[in-house]
Image 1: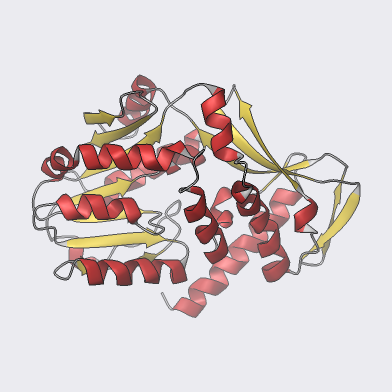
Image 2 (image 1 turned 120 degrees about the horizontal axis):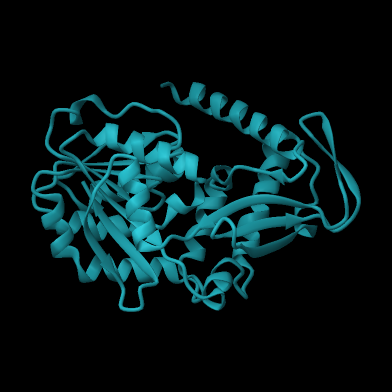
Length: 315
């Protein structure tokens, strides 16, 4: 698809999601729109914060079990990464693989994706890199040349699956199953349920980087949709939803106000929130059962000693 056409389609989708989301009784915005170039950069900063355990824990698991993960993938693999971002953890996997054929990073942020692809081409000179600009939560086409060219292995680190509700997570797993084919495999990082004194600070750090990341979606609305948010005045909130087994992020209005977006007005009461993200936490058995219902079987499992995080090898 032409890049300009794709940008126009994304802007239309963004506008529709924002207008629909702000009109709901519980105002909400899909978390995928948090990841514009500035949002991607802020999230990379989050992954380096002391409170944000998922990145360092998953990274340690990948490093400690790199040989086993490479054996699970097999030689000549085509590695598809959904929501690639900077692809930092992917370097561990690609570096351990036996004669990998290609790396296909998939991300909605095209400019950020170009930087990731360029870095992989430089670091792994013999590796074919075929970036795909796409929203991985919707149907998209893979590069034609990989479809009959070795085993396909999906890589979905970072517990990103937890950002999807049960229906969308199931549809995503089914789409991934179709895209890697019956002989393919998947490596998926899942954040596990644990004490709230560990969970909540990971989404509300003392330095305020997560708050900036959350508020950035309002800055994006102002820039791309003519919004009139005073983004800096909205309060970032992280809370636990027991019924959903999820940490939720919200943005709270400081006053009663009416805010215009794309020519439409939206009333906010003081203390009313916009729900911007849910990060669901799983138990090992529960996720294995969920994956099985959507076309996958758990063959391997790698965890840290405290079982804060798990990396599943699915076939």
